[in-house]
Image 1: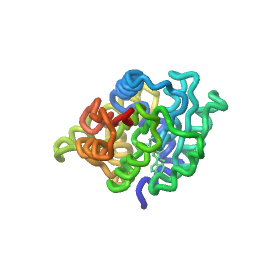
Image 2 (image 1 turned 60 degrees about the horizontal axis):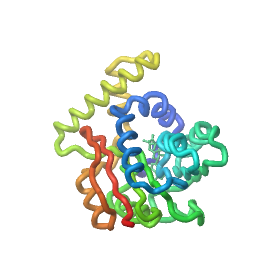
Image 3 (image 1 turned 180 degrees about the vertical axis):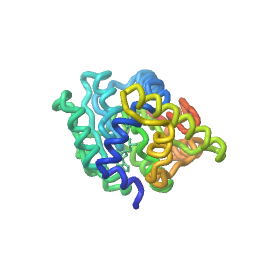
Image 4 (image 1 turned 90 degrees about the horizontal axis):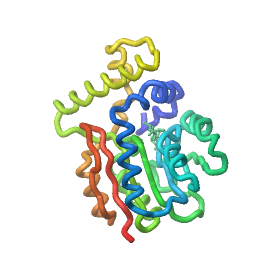
Length: 243
Ligand SMILES: C[S@@+](CC[C@H](N)C(=O)[O-])C[C@H]1O[C@@H](n2cnc3c(N)ncnc32)[C@H](O)[C@@H]1O
């Protein structure tokens, strides 16, 4: 299957939204780091873009935090876009949801002519693209940013060694298991490991080291680039467009 194509499957989308998203370790802390940096950038937030939005989990946080902002949400999975329409319905006209495939540069035509964005955010999506395409997408994102504005990528990145990969998989299994038990699901830890952590679409992940991706951002001209948070394979990184 091509990169990320599994996300067009309603069963995987349902499993992600019910059993995985809420169980990502330190997910709230990742969002808190992103919001702190956005505040620090000092750019008034009127328009933002959520790239590979899924059901709009991250963009919904921005809509709550910045009541005058409108958000554009892009994804290529119809079941995810439907979940986004439902989740984001309370925000009415402040939301623009677009079907777009990030695997080529044409995706940005879905954004229309509204100008630049005061935040571009992405969560656990860009690792479905090849490394060449990731880098190209980052250059497209830079062009879409208002001067001074942040691109923040909350992302699954690669481990340095197989031992660290195993440590991360154990962490994920514990975290998803706890989450699913707490939400009343009848599962064993072994089932969680088989169905969520070692699931077949894992081979569609094209993980890259966070250091390499930060280097790409610097080479492209982003400033204040860093990995702002990291827990094994979970990273929050990005940079700003220079003033
Ligand atoms: C793990 S989900 C993350 C969703 C959401 N951003 C979040 O933080 O929960 C990955 C998302 O990336 C989207 N995606 C993967 N490849 C894509 C592509 N080529 N174009 C557009 N969206 C893509 C999937 O459809 C899915 O919604």
